Length: 68
Image (cartoon, rainbow, N blue to C red; front, top):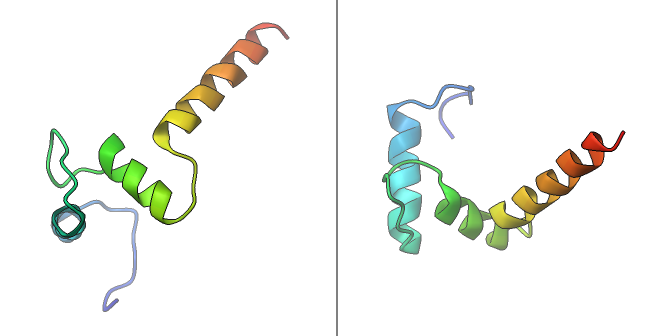
């Protein structure tokens, strides 16, 4: 990487996301954005929780908080 990472999601990041999606054949409603389809592929590749697993866990946590 030739530049230092930042928290800014600018044009270079968008181009990198598009290249990743194109390389892996990922289709998102809005190209260049890291949506559920892109996160799902990334999670599977790096053995991370899927977006659906995270949503399910969040629902469980919200339910548990209501009972405190």
